[in-house]
Image (cartoon, rainbow, N blue to C red):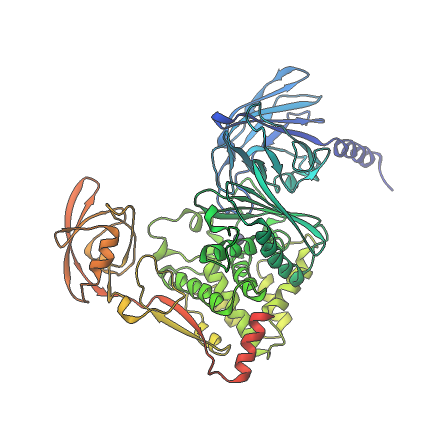
Length: 618
Ligand SMILES: [Zn+2]
């Protein structure tokens, strides 16, 4: 029997739910990079409403304390000021109020990354995490958002691009938008500016790309290529029930790279000249990188935005949220991003193997893979992967790159051991069915258990070694069983990211065991590899390289001079450490074979070649 108290609580809840929180955002002073954000709550907690800014944004696992960008905060009710008290780094509490309460924030926005907020005279971009506080205890209440235009003459030709549902606003216009709850409100980044917009359908779902920046892009080709990639992914895992639109927000400045996934959109950055111009043919290396980024963020729409680790259901945005599974969400996504390019016909097999060779090279060049497992790398992402220092190459391994290689190894192992009857595609399909639309998160051991269950194989030793271990993955053998030969060679220099064979004469015999950065005139030591010549000579990260054997040296010059030495030769390396000039004695060592390239083995037997073709075409 329902009791009266429950009925009353239910009635109050229904009233609250019927009145959405009213947010507004206004580019108040674009030249000073200041937004004004207002939030009106119809039924504030009479004990004193608490408001909280997120400490981090889903998809980027680092505490960024977005409240630090709030310049001023005040509250008002019925035109009168209400006292507001700061509770901790991210939260405010308003004094008692039993009627409508409005919080007014001034927020500084000058972070042009995909996880930030940025405002100037040319555009506005924001993630909700950077500008919108949550109403504590009422996070489930629907939210209405009014996006306001700046004062003229700024923003005369500005349009609004966001995947948030419109509630009165014209398409691409200022005005009212709505979200089901706070979690959804902050999952729709918004770009406002002079935009080039292209539209296309994927399996009857309207998709669009909104580009900021003077790109002079071939929009018809771009839309066609994006459509091809999206259709490929959609035919793989199927259309999510709530996917009724999708938007790529692309910021295309002179240079830059990055992406962040959302449920109905993604925010991307790439250099404007990486996009195809009218008349361009073929896929340049830079455009291939961009297509890989698009493919990656779009695949996330299933893998991490809907299939999520259990600890992210719901997200706790007040503090770090640890999981050992980022390798599944970022690594498996990184495996499928490039694989989708070859499977959908955007690139050929040679081009795909080049990308795979580059991923293997990145892992091979990090000796940190021998110290940190991907489970640990996932767990410690907050303080290690996202806060890399000069020792990162020696101490950590990326759960993106090694995660992608574990996905590759698992896929090839499943294909070999089940005679092609089970593949990673089947595991992901099962993961989608189990966790994709149930709202339930994947438990920490979920992916491994599911893989064993779906394949019928005992995969315990594989996962122990690959995920929790720090040994080498059996890639050479697995690739050979799929008609691909694996090769390692020495690096040809700073610009050599691997993936391609090189003639022996082009490869320096010795190395410094360090990364040199900086401008040509003053190379500066970055990462110093454990056990390498630079470390043994006593060179430290940050040392400025002045001379090699008494001769002033530039970045390019250093690579050229390196070719004149042999293993065992000694050199005087003169560096500035701060303002102290010092000369250190360095003994050159043989350069390691740390650069991978892969070749299609056309001598392989027909069944091996057929296995390779099935893998790369699905
Ligand atoms: Zn990702």
